[in-house]
Amino acid sequence: YLLLYYSLLQMLRCCICPSLLLCLHLILLLQLVSNFSSETTFFSGVPVSVHQGHTATLPCWLNPPKSAESLDVRWFLRDTFDAPLLSYQGRQVHHGSQYVDRAAFGLRDATSSGELGSPPVLSPQWNVNGTVNVSCSSEGWYPKPWLRWSEQGKVETPKVLTHNTETSGLVSVHSSRLVSSPSKVFCSIGLHEEENWEAALHLQGPVQTNAQGKEFNLGSSPSGWVLFGVTFAALLIVSAILAYFLKNRGKLENIMVTCSQSAEICALVKYCSAPTFPVFILTLFSVPTVNVTLDNTENPFLRTKDGRIVRDGDVPDVPDGALVTGATSIKGASGFSSGRHYWEVLLGNEKVGFKKSWWIGVTSVTGSLEGLSGLPRASHGYWFLSSDATKGLWLNTEPVVLLPVQSTPQTLGVYLDYDSGKLSFYSAGDKRHIATVECSFKGEVFPFFNPGKGDAAPMEIVHREEVESSHDEHV
Image (cartoon, rainbow, N blue to C red):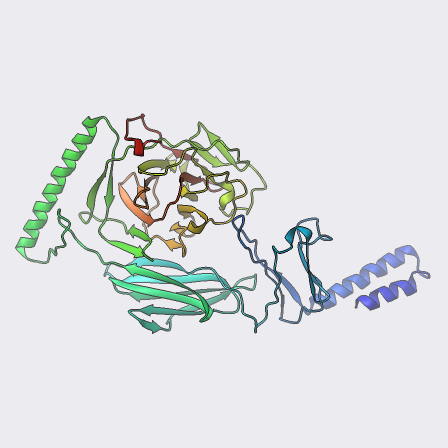
């Protein structure tokens, strides 16, 4: 087509007026595009976000599948078509000067090794009868991956399995199954046995405990109900004493509530379903509230006030559009390298409403967060609880864990036990435990915040009256 196109132009250039030549030029060009487009559609991936310093895959392919060996394929930044980062032409790969040894090229077809998707996302949903509906999902595969469940060493083919092909051409996979509690269930996804993802969910059934922490069963015996009554009365008395003690001590301390129905995710995460009275345990943390102050590093995508209030900035070209990514992140000015610390964050009010999207946690990154994008993981030095309108509450663990809570907190409490390697999140308003992540901290860690995008309500760090504290609990 191209050869014919240029040959005709050369033949007619000397005998056709300029206006007619321009018209013929457009007709031939449109015909060329029409003939090629009727046979082949070009696909490129959806926008890709990645943490600075990590690897990103930028896919591009033809539909229906056909050989691309004779084509000119380019990856380039905006307005730099003639200076691509990576190009494939004449069956040779060419690198831009800044991307030598930083970019790799590979053709994908039905016989290639394929594209390894994202780690599985496990989402448990507790049922009233004690069973748990567990779903497993992943995206970004090519071609279609297999998915297997296993429990107690027995591998099972899923009864419910769904594959969806996205506009990018990559495939997402989803499956769910009903399991009993307690149990430990595994979900594996892959293209072949040598390279796949596996995630485990360890479910521990509901347990009722007495004041000494020993298990007991109320059953239907009179002695069980007597024991329950005595335990319940003791809890009320202890609660009243603690409230009086805290009120008159003149030092702010926090009573947190954890529920006994818990789950362990890959031995890393512990969380509770919504606690129902009286199945809970009162726990007293003798830790004063820390008055966290935001880092004063300028971020064009954020607006801050008084060092403790932050929201997204009124900037039209925020990276990643409406998707919440690291571009709108900020950390605390001071970090922690030992001890126990607790702080609270207001997520809105009745007047302006409550935030739908946010990240709150800690980070071990000591420098500026400028240039942070995508979803940072624990392996990048970030541990946080996240909320969004589609997933609800979830943790940025690997794999991501969705938390089955009935309502998002209006005030979030963050409890950091550095020496024990634990980071806990609480709904401070109703003293409800949400999740605890077991981490391995090295060096200083800083409070970490992301107010998200588009919410009317800002994110506000709660400041309390200064109190005296021991050296390992003071900021």
